[in-house]
Length: 146
Image 1 (cartoon, rainbow, N blue to C red):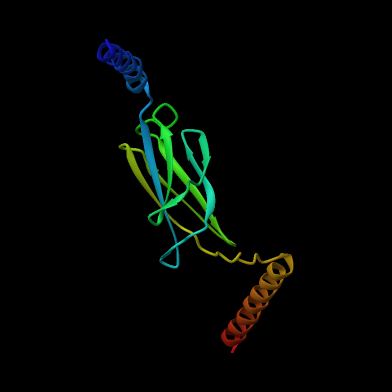
Image 2: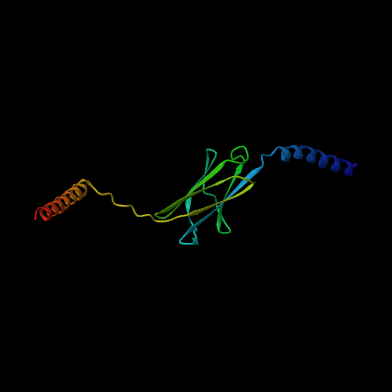
């Protein structure tokens, strides 16, 4: 009787658990390799965006950050975009989700802002260019009058 009861309980447990496992939403595994000056970055922060579902950059494992999305949140053929920050450096990368395992490579770099030339520099360039044109023209006309 004891064996029958144990067998019945195990059978009932398996019968109840199997549908739950079968109905579980499969996952897409997104791994992100973040590097700075060619070296892996430990301690980067950022976000992973797949099909409008945004998650923070996952935990670091084996030199890459890992995020898991359900197929309903991140279906195949959608684009995953990763933005990473490391100190004052930042970078982003994207990839097409073509299988259950997708790798995204991101390089974080410091980009110094390019100074924009202001109004004074523009006026100076126009004045110098116009003055040079007038001087060359005057010399050319003077040379042909002789």
